[in-house]
Image (cartoon, rainbow, N blue to C red; front, side, top):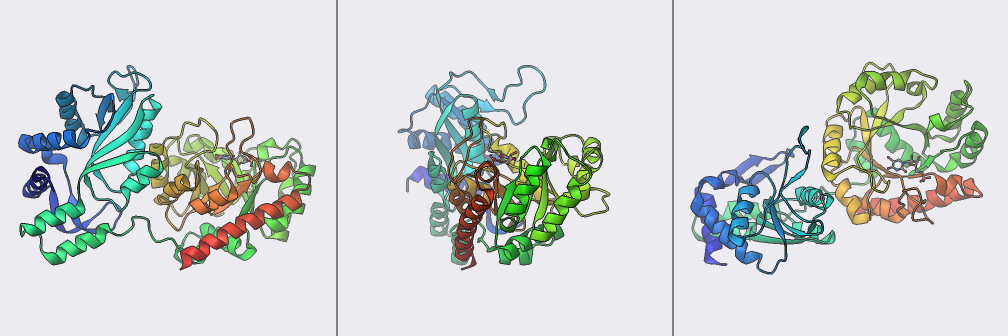
Length: 469
Ligand code: 5BU
């Protein structure tokens, strides 16, 4: 190891940026070490060493501008920019409500390449958020440089999405230098090494194992119905008249564990719609899910949910909710209700060009995690199984991931819908597939529903068997 790297490790240890012992992480897990590089800016000699290390490590990278992820890496990127005479840009933490409202500050040309500097890599998630912001502004990202790699497989995770990770020092380097100098004892060193060599992904559990850990009654009900019915197929019954609606539902009822409605599409909705729907739900043992996508302030959604022509709260146990208006929407919808109801939050959408960002997705899941009593899970999508896995890893095991935009035969609908295969959806970690036109636009919905149910269940069973091991 280069002497400059050894010095960096010793310096970081000296100023208390690397600590060993027992620390509680944001996730609740406990860690035998803690790294906090925020104070390095107060040590110009250390910064100089870092900048010279960064300079030599990136000698093979090609880029037109540099950025650092705020806050810690931004001053480092600024120093490097001066050193290399390369322009600096940076991402605002919040978009200004006045002025230009720009997300990226600095001048650059569309299509230019941006090198991203960060202090640490743990899971890689914040790197994706940074890359996405740069890419949305028209920059291209190939390379990330991190001062310390404390991840299990960060470079692999980034490589799967086409990014290269260069790290200056790893946890193994730190252990080597500090134990050699007598600054870390062997027992603690092996604890630290075991800790980083554990996959960040929580051990995946089968659905029956997850059911045991799930407390929220309506989430349990979903899991129990899937297991009892041996189906993870949700039929999206987007038809416009009641006759067709009930004909298809009667024919496909045996194959599905839940029906998803857009009740406002139905032209001839009358008082007998709800009793008929509930009757079939009971006959075939499926649940009812209204895809209303509530998105307004709490007081308005409360009325939309409980009142109006459709009185959704009376018959739909599950509904979809956008979080754009903030967490209070959940109180508006589910507070003071006489009957238990639960929501699925929109974490990602399948529509091409939709405006949901990685940051938004993370924030939605953070809210949903803290409201498990009324949030059974999320609606998500992804470009492939790997991408869905990244999403699934953010979702707790006692909540579900439902996936629309699934089709066995088509890639899209010409109106922006982007379809995934059943296998990719399930392999990535979707717990249920939502299928509409793949079934309802076919000549024989009953046969198609069986085909989707069988392929969904086969993929689900083989994933569950793997997880249960
Ligand atoms: P399709 O006919 O299988 O394309 O229908 C998909 C259904 O799922 C349809 O009711 C959409 O409103 C719904 N949907 C979706 O397709 N993509 C999304 O991201 C979300 C919902 Br959220």
